[in-house]
Length: 306
Image 1: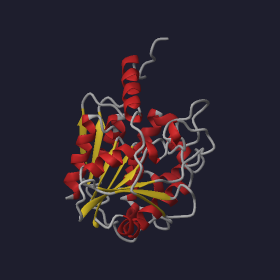
Image 2: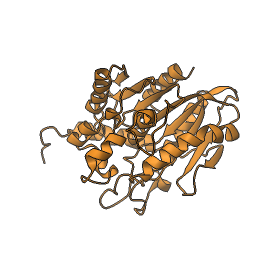
Image 3: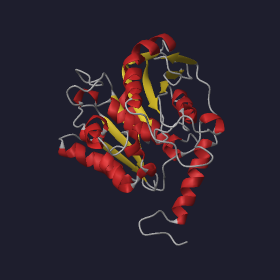
């Protein structure tokens, strides 16, 4: 069957499959410690100490992607956490409740379901409850689990759906009045590095990103507009927090247009967001320690953290 206009061509799909296979080929890396920030089994944080033994190092908070769907958990991001720890960072990899957790998993829970339709994306409001609670608890949890981490220097990063959550976590002080997640002041962050983030909901919905995951995250079309005001990073600007986006030009999972829409929205709000575009790179090399793009990610974090 011929490709339809506007759809990824076969070469793009083949590249995406190869990049995905490479990123998921790494075995999960066990953390140095794990701590709970709530009673649910998914309300946990894995901690990775800097591999060079240094102390007083910045803390990188990592929010994994996977379209907010349960078949993807933090295990698939653990090689990235280890990569950053080998670059001298302390790392906190956050788990959170996702949608459709009754769907069978493969690769020990780190990969997509093997058959059937995609599970529902996210839980409203639990996904947001968890990210807010985890970020609020992290300074205390990290001080116990990673005494070498400097919790005064925190950078939040995340990939894809996790990139959305990273941007959202940095914007809680500009949430609408009455939001249960609103902070009275900006969170104490050095910055955010979002990797191919689902950063602008209107653009993501228009492009059908991740099979309608954005609409599912907000509980469906009913009430979407009201909930988007509490959840869409593109509507929560300016934040006043240093923000950088790393985006593969060849990304067919979360296309470049989604990041560009967020950058443009920030500019219209009077804020500059850095956008690093990587030619010849798709969605998954950004979290693949074997890919050159991963080193670019580490450098972007370094620039904000130190």
